[in-house]
Length: 287
Image 1: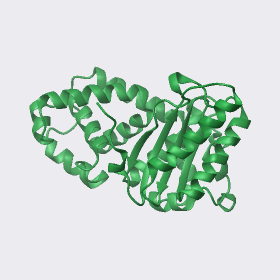
Image 2: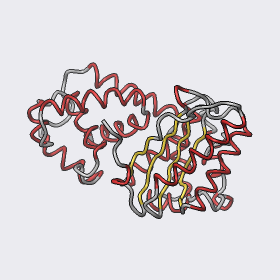
Image 3: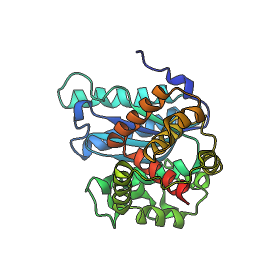
């Protein structure tokens, strides 16, 4: 099957969580010199393609970016960033071939709740990787949270003020949210996943239509958010709702429901952001 045309989800003002990984787990940064060079290309992309950077984290073998595109140019901007850095990296390290796994993964974010979850996950990625202590998430030099120690000292290329406006939070609230949402959150989510996989008892209300109304009021339209829809299907299946009922609710075949359930189950082990979203959904549905 060919690649999906990314232009379908590109429009002015769109917000994305971007993940770019090294091919076959290859380290894309070997030292701080490499990271500084990547940041130079990132700054150039921001300026030339009119990108607003909300959050970032440079790890050893992957990168997280939370960005807003003022123009509908995500593909062009990311092609410039990844190809420029890969060309430089190969030249410096005397290597050939692809540096990044495929192109990159982009998660379209159109809800303040998802935006806050993405910003939290990205800023806490160094903590979860064990690079810094959970009590000091702002001590990792190569993440956006490093620059958030003082609101008045945030650099102009890091658009924290607009991020806060979109998340409907004050700076102090945002800082407290990130600092308290450390590894404990990951442990809680793992416990939740364990319960979802082992429990045969339904803990949610029986009325699935009522649950959908709660989700719509809390997160927005499900039909226009494929990832939200898929996570809901996964939860409903794990909670014991009838496949026929789920398929009728989402107007799809039983086979499609089971296929989505299996895909989300696989994605949960490789995409940690899904865990945060799953946790938010479970809290909403159970409240």
